[in-house]
Amino acid sequence: MATASTRPDVFYPESDGEPMGETLQHRDANIDLILSLQDWFADDPLAYISGDEFVYWVEGDPRFVVSPDVWGTRGIDKTIIRNVYKTWLEGGKGPEFVIELTSPSTRREDRGKKFRIYRDDLKVFEYFLFDPLGEYLKPRFQGYRLAEGEYRPIEPVDGRLPSEFLGLHLEPEGHFLRLHDPATGRRLLNRLERLEEAERGRREAEAEIDRLRRELEALRAGQKPGPKPKKRK
Image (cartoon, rainbow, N blue to C red):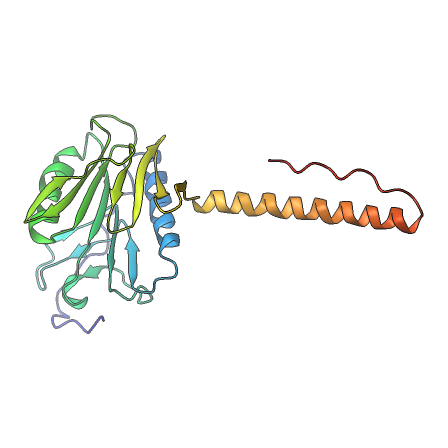
């Protein structure tokens, strides 16, 4: 549970003024992942999913900061409004899961400085790197899991990388990362796809209501109702 800071005199910046994402594709993939994971954990009040948020881990020294593109942790009340994340106010808990959407301009930081911070300082359990445009990383989606203080490569399962933290498998699709539920074998719909599916369902329901209304009117008029239209697959 968050508590009051013991060092209210220290200023912890909330932003560096840089835009989210190296390119429009990076930005879109970033937002899609954050929203999809927040939806996946919607019923868990203690699963905190965030992204592009400053994470501080040394009280009193704002130089120790990192801003993962997509990250999550458990056991944290997500209903509390946070402008920045300070581990000492969260029972010492930091990110347990991180995805960096990497590019040639961030490769040195993502594979060097951040790699060491996540492994040695924050002890992030799972660290994934995704190159949305396939500009340098081969393969363009890679994952590591912390074991005995070292990051070990995560081995693919049916061509996808499994995340123990998420309970999901992840796979590149275009410049997006898609989430798959291994329990059902199905890809999870993102928020836009669910809205589109709901809209299709609404239109089909309206069409069915209209057909039934015409049948009823025909029966009242003593006419034989027309054939029932085939349902589109």
